Length: 190
Image (cartoon, rainbow, N blue to C red; front, side, top):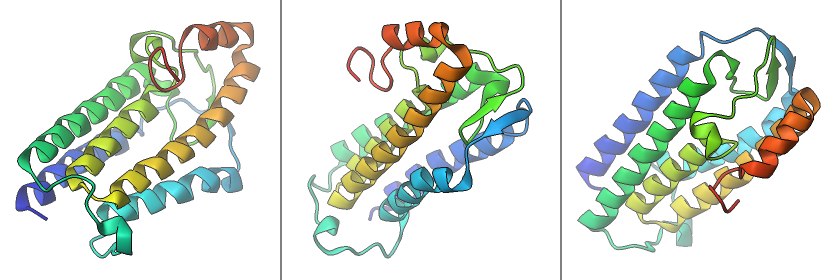
């Protein structure tokens, strides 16, 4: 794997993780949190996805074969998509403010956020992370990267279904109207 790939992508993801960790300290008090078994259902596939993408010894036969050539254009397209996805997730996190949580929760004084990136999709953090994962997978160019994106997509879909149920319970008709107006992950599509 080229040195540039080995340094640029970890730098982008580590910078994002550092921001995420720092920002997680300024949130509202949680009044309701999903159970540990529920959390594991979406976290375990995400962990497998990360191992597939970043595991230095993730040798999994046919999944290590290339679906894209090892070329500069795949690296740069992947870099741009990864950066755009991570920045979109950060924008969403900033816009969500103190309502954010890494788990499915209801916060004390929870607000329904429908502006900024939330006017484009209901779950812009997941949208951004999926775009960033897709960019990373394209730059990697191996089938294991696409499997990682699929696993992450399934995990996020499971988690967002729980979040949607809780938001309908919390905000009722206001959330139903918002969900009718704005797609979940891909503007105007999904």
